[in-house]
Image (cartoon, rainbow, N blue to C red; front, top):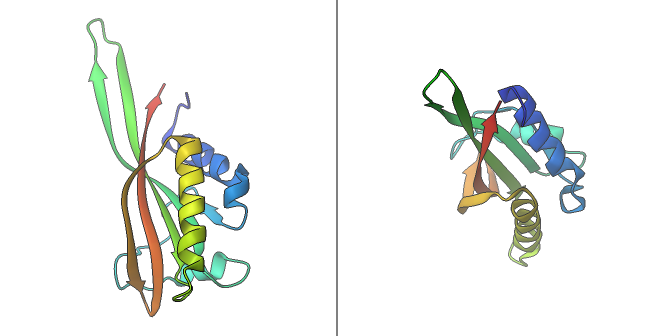
Length: 138
């Protein structure tokens, strides 16, 4: 168990980066942009070696603390793990590779996949997945 939010995010990002399925993706252990539907995807494009979006972002969503008699406590952080892949056209290549990578990473890290969608981001259409994991903090 890690002892800080920053270390947990770094560990999750490293686990994603180490997977062969995610070898072509850029992984950020922090919120790199304010990407909401319709916003610019530039930071994700600029980080990619080929200028096409293929990125993961790991960020803390919330935490809870359970207190026990005697002063002991347990803290659990909930993390959002977001995956973006630039839409590649009607042949389905981007959807196939998006699904394969998402499945591999979600299985390996035991992520709950909450949403899969297509979203516009400043003139670019992105495959988008929202995943979640709960981690206990020491």
